Image: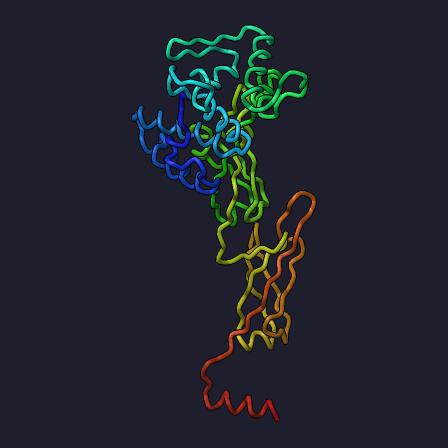
Length: 319
């Protein structure tokens, strides 16, 4: 193969998928155009890393690439026999596109399906496949030529990123500008009102480029909603709290309470117990056709010190 994707990423040929992903993220960050503005070599390296990862991160593409790499390299024109490294010195990627490749004075051109069929017969003998009286062909050979015969394209891998937004932006919805699309370009993403923490948004066509003319993958954005100092969400309901004094809880009072849209006056009934939750109907989140409520927990602040007179009054009250 013309490009050694393992060498580009700096990983071993048997590197597990999670290691490949980790190395890719490090290299993509290192050579990203935003961090290397005007550096043509860094941009070229970034594209190489993207291309390598798009193949090695996909199990099927990696298997096909390893096969091409194994049987498509040429190490010596004078080698005898048909070892794994003496397959003529052509580039399989060109072959799959119906093109030509020439190295060491050898050129291969394929102008018809008959040419490809003849080459399949030849490769079938190497892979233990098609022989005289065998009409099935080898699975390995069929895998190599299937895409070329059918014209099948391959969709590019998806990309993933995370964005954090304040709680109130998750309530109202917001449009964000990100540098996270294909090639690091700027894209605008609409985050819908009512999105929950961990919700995901799919942006079509902003992932890794496809192979053989296939469409690009998608960009998957995970939205993290930052905690709010006043509101806490549970489904479409929101929870808040209000503090009253010991006497106010006994006598009853009114308190100004924030909701998602405005401030309202809340009546605290006489004799309200600590921890009581009062409901404000329809003051929660509206998501689609569903609207939640707001629950206000009443916290009673007990006095930490008492005067002698207050102590006597409490003792008389207990009698």
